[in-house]
Image (cartoon, rainbow, N blue to C red; front, top):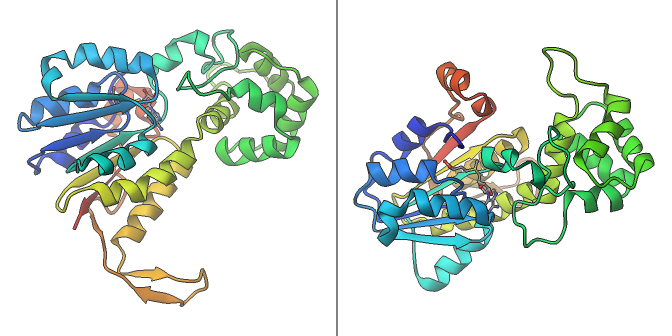
Length: 303
Ligand SMILES: C[S@@+](CC[C@H](N)C(=O)[O-])C[C@H]1O[C@@H](n2cnc3c(N)ncnc32)[C@H](O)[C@@H]1O
């Protein structure tokens, strides 16, 4: 079962609030949700979204004691603000814990893991058409280079993309791993699997993880009621950069109007930064749950 990351820190972020409506955009197995619902019996409506139906089914069962308060949506979190706006629902607490869950990795047939031979799928939302195999087999070499370099932060991005293009067609996780191992080498004892970053990059690209986060943040901030709080947990430096930039801009009393240095205009800050620096897991947490190692939490409060 998925262990919720930075759980204590998430509870602390919402501790001072009396919550009416909570929006959890990445419900997963409902680990954070369960703890939040226990800590905040005053919650009237808990909206939980996940683009993966298997996760929603698990969460529905786990959260059954609160079924009267639950509204579960099989939906990308980036689509929810518009729907809530139409319905006139305004949350005063929002949480995103983005990325992939342990359950998704453990379902080997879904193609997230290089440890199990399976079709190269990697879709969190199984109703989406484009799979990782589509990217691997149809992207240009340049597109693959950028995915491997920017989303995977893989040093051998150029050679990896060239090997993939030469190795096409590639249908399964093991085929991709074999092709990549020709340039990245095989795993050595005690080291991390060399294909890890390329698999991560393909997952992020398949699910458009950076794009949906960028779409969501300004809408999420707008949706929050004054005094409401939003916490975002990321696992990738590019995601954290997107959250940091969006929060910093929302908290600033100036904005750069033209992209040139010095071209600033005054604006009203929309939020306060509750955590100036990203909140990271303790050593105790990472010892118990190595998946938490790269987690970062940022929290803001709507003014
Ligand atoms: C790290 S898990 C969340 C775990 C959850 N907080 C818990 O404690 O059990 C991330 C979940 O978010 C979902 N997810 C990721 N990106 C999403 C998106 N853009 N829209 C909706 N769900 C998303 C994934 O399907 C996955 O189930």
